[in-house]
Image (cartoon, rainbow, N blue to C red):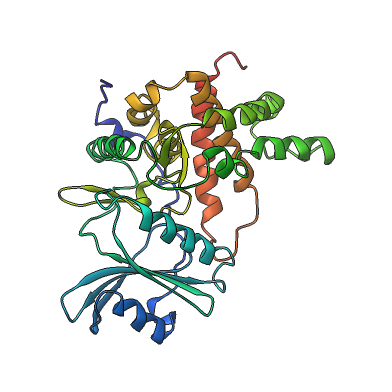
Length: 336
């Protein structure tokens, strides 16, 4: 068992890293008839209360709704006007969530409204809260325990989904994109890049290639677990937002979680993730390759212009890239 001094939680950061939160559409901007249809999926009734939710990078509306019937539901809605890709992401989320086992720790999807370029998803509301983004060790332990149970439940995968190598191929090419900039661009094309990464760019690009082999497995994995995609209820931890579900090795989810923990609370508490038994069972070279590939993704994406409707995403990715670089440097001590 990893022993962690909980006081490390209080000591790590003098400044608060960027939150995983974007700029969301107000509930009132969703067409009235679509709001009514969404409520009808939960049995109808008048909206008594609609509480907008923050967290996550979707530009769509996210609202906890209380109906006059007493029913509580969670509604998320987006159109291409907010971001051209988001409606398809919502459709993917609906498809995978609907196919998950009924007893999985995932909010139940009640239905979908897909009209006029809008996609509206309606879920049972969960009486829970997101973990503190500045991960408290007790909350992180609870989430990791729940993750272990989730991984067991979803192996073998109960859902038809892409293989992890297919899903992650477009993301795990950041170092190769940087190498292309180095080879094709002006001499100062990578002046913004960490000097250690510049020195080892070719080797990092090779690790990306290995990473796509390393992620193979039989478990349905989430690939976007962060504090803003988790709800802690009094009796259960729920994992939400499944558009990027795929079939691979369960430890991949924890490797992709590490930067968002490390950036907030540092390496000491992040050891709860990096030394977790699910990760410890994996080949260390595979873990290093996937960690390096995800770092390359964060580094490359953080250097891009902000996507439409997602003005806060790049700051978060840049902060996560700093943490992820620190992690892989520690895993590659022979690389000076």
